[in-house]
Length: 146
Image (cartoon, rainbow, N blue to C red; front, side):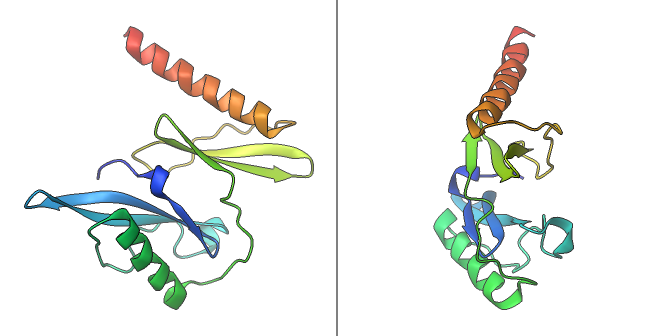
């Protein structure tokens, strides 16, 4: 699997649709997608890969396929958007959350849909993002020096 294209992810009814290039055929890219669920493992679709089993010819096309599948098969629908505060930094997905005056985050690397965030609370969104950015910058600085 190629990297997850977090830049083209779309939040939809409590899910985050994340496209990626599944493969190539005659120099054309074939797209698939993965899902994150607002309710996590309580949803059978959380971290699933292309439950519609239909592929697309562009990121926008695969997002539409995923939306249609969710309209017909989602195990819940949410009106809120917990994925609205998401950022892509060095191809990593960072999702910020705010609860009871504290901020925390989920961090997903470019090729895996595994949350590698540290269990840390912050007083502001800025403080949280700054800490994550410093960690990722340090990670990449160390890789260059090797």
